[in-house]
Image (cartoon, rainbow over all chains, first blue to last red; front, side, top):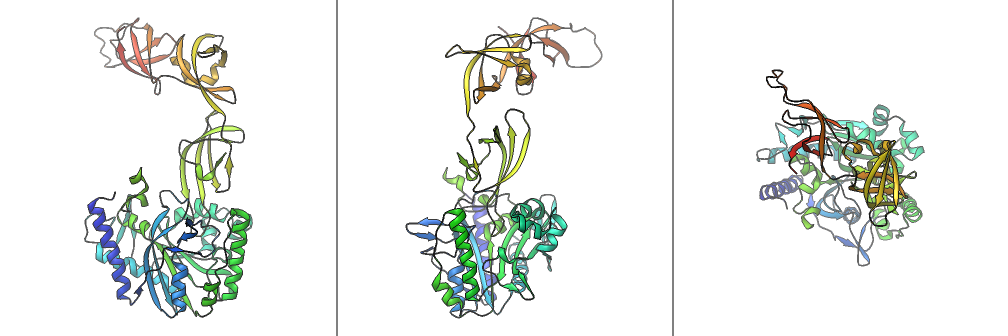
Length: 308
Length: 187
């Protein structure tokens, strides 16, 4: 179990997150954790609860709220993903998601920079922080959190770090392996980094980039080689979203032997949504960095080992 | 059959027909990407290391491994003879497959022998063995070289460093993991 000092830090961290968004006129929302249907995502295996599912992300409900007219919303909630266990993974973890209308993915990058600045101001005075003077401690090194952070396109990152080009990696179906092995360790080492513009196949809910339809306006925030957040300009073309879901459903059926249904109501309501952007941030991972810990299991109130 | 999701430190799996033990393991899953199981593994026969990344639909055979209680009988021309203490079956293992273990094996010693597909691939010795010193130079009084150890030979032919007071005929305890002297033992 997290010790009392840790619980206090976690609570102060949550409080700071919330006050940042409240100050920015975001509405805090809460949506059902257990739902009959999740958004079809090939690589995410949900945890079943009776005939329903525990949410893998609050995305579906939050986007329906946007479509219904909310302009800035955020949520801090627990999410579940089956079989994800490791130093940086828990089957039940804490997610922070926020969404804005009339915004694109660059606006979310700016939000991330401002959010970390606000956390630093609120928590910097607390005792056991993994940071000091605007820097994050990573072993012997320090990572500067001063904005602006680095921005690197996926294309450029592969050109710099990978033995093969992004096009080759996609053609060989080795994108994930190469990213993990050759690219990620160098991302966000001196200051946080936004890796942006993914091949459109890797962003099933993200909008195509104007002028580069093979790319999706999607980014990941990396700090010290660790992926912290995934954000994108929302795909709001209901017709295209249906086609992308069809591909995910096909893959799920073929490769994972999992059947799911098309989220019809979501697609219907998506048609009413104009320009928007949304992001999901792994709260436990960020807390892990701020507390100077090595694994997410050490920063949640009860980790898996507390039930052995 | 194991799937990639079963991989963890210490798990024994079969890869390309050989038994491997997982020595290091990390689960990773890049955002929106697939689960990757990154492993370091040691070939249990050759000792070679293998670094490999698996995906969730990769499958592994369980290696056919069996540990049998055996007694080491004797050695003849680099062939080491063992007997199964349950069914009295005798087997022979080559010196090269036993590696450093031969330094600590004395006739009639009990040990566990690991078999892969009915082929002996490894022996596990007790953590400590007691061996008789067969050759030691006497400790020269007035030796001013300042050294606090000297080499001795034990009954298996193994040579190691011991404190100067150990004499020929003494029985000493040796740590089989490091090959180092532990203490002098009395019968």
